[in-house]
Image (cartoon, rainbow, N blue to C red; front, side, top):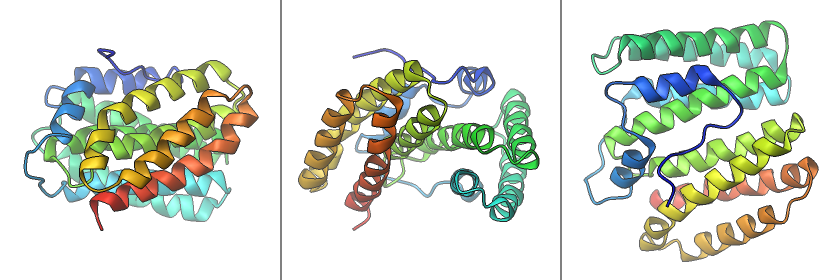
Length: 230
């Protein structure tokens, strides 16, 4: 098993954010804890809102719905402000998260879909990793699979085959770690379906191939979430 998760797309800001956070668990700690037997707790409302708003920005930028994206950004900023007041958030985390939000805002102002999507998706990753501290009912790995599905769309659009391959490998590793929990919760059928999708992804030869599979993967991740919230 690999000891670290690769961070796709040469986005050093969030890489620093995640490696220097004093209170954030490593990706390995995240997965071990969220897949364990610890009783789940309620994820911090600002953190949950941060992830949801970032995903909303991604979806809106993808369809060039700039008004809706602007509204989601306002919610994102409010959530980030509330989150920054928590003592577990270090100053480097606050500073770098603010930098990511600034890049999202710049992308929105320029009506630059790809830039906005890239940085909004990185915020969803940040939220997913930090949510592991709460041992959520839906494992944080499921949110990471959602993140990787969106990364496939981003790098397909950018025609970056190298990042697509890296994303696929990271997704496979994450799935390998959370799959037992999916099966334990009665999701044998959903697990088998996701296995098949990953096999198809292994055969992808072009960015268009990856793009054609990304929507099915994101749809299946929604079904994986329902395994834990029937």
